[in-house]
Length: 519
Image 1 (cartoon, helix red, strand yellow):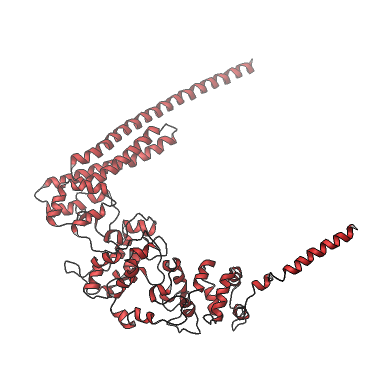
Image 2 (tube, rainbow, N blue to C red):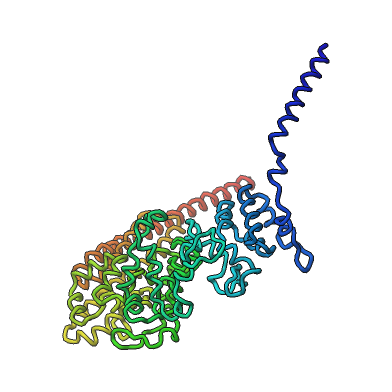
């Protein structure tokens, strides 16, 4: 009886399972891939090898059902009709969500299809790309694509258009005009980037006054007012399809890439031919070379110090201008504020203003700022102060005397620091306490650093406020060293006496033992 009831229960369960199968399609049917898609996925090349790598096939297999459906729709509409095209689309390292965005953009699908496009309009990747603006890897890495704006955002039409809309042809100047007259570029980019309401939808923190600033810049005046299409515009610095945020190491506007970006034009003698400075001299093209060797260039480009200034830190970004003489010091004191304040109260400020000299640049240079040494203050030809005073302050010997005093004092402090460092090592090796000397060494370092900065006051009394504590520290250190040496000599004498006493005791013991043995 119990066995009969069990059989009835099992029959009911199997009946429900069979009935439910009529309403729920099999899993295989849900994920069924159309034959046309499979044909592209399984295609082989002329050498018989699969067109898709195993990684690309695995990526496709892991895509959500919706993404696979979008690809199948694109194949059905013949926007995708080539196995090489499928390989390209699956090889650019997108997430599943980004792949869905790409597969809904008929512009990208059409321009990655070698069956429809020739070399001049076909997107591909890497060295095979015909110009960097046709590199698909760059396009999908672009900040606009990542924010959901693709081809139609600039070119017109909509992503789901199946044919080229008339707007696309009307929105841009003709090809020849685009190349010959670049005035349209700032206005074109400004359609979005100058519209706060539009930009708020994508990046509320991004300023919307770039085009207005650009119009006041040297580049903007050249292009917009004088019609000089060699002048830099938006795409000259930011690129076309591969625009990235400035925080990206691959961005042309990342601090470490800015010098090379500016150098593309400013280091090209052919491009810069005919341009002149305000003095009427040919505009130099060695700025990048000088900058790379400068203390700023080494810090940024070799030591990856992102706090070091690049071109735009001094010249500006969209409002880039050659710094006026009066503004050079204000730019420098953005970082070197203490030195700027010292200079403001100095006698040199009036002298520099009278002669029209750039405050910081007169002594330190511009693009070729080198690492400073105390030797630059020496009282002889080649010394920074001497060479200037020998021409402009021959009637005031106090100028050179002050520079000589600065050099002598700082040299004394620097040499004393070096000697103190050596003494700390020597005394520590002798087992003596060097904590006091270490503290003195730290104080001397501070005084030396402050003294070097106080030179910018060009005043002895002000300079002495920083230097005198260092000189006193040297005297204290010398006293500590002398005391340590006396202690060391005392220890040596004590050790010698102790060794002698031990020797006498040992000798006495030896003699006593011999007496005992002889008895």
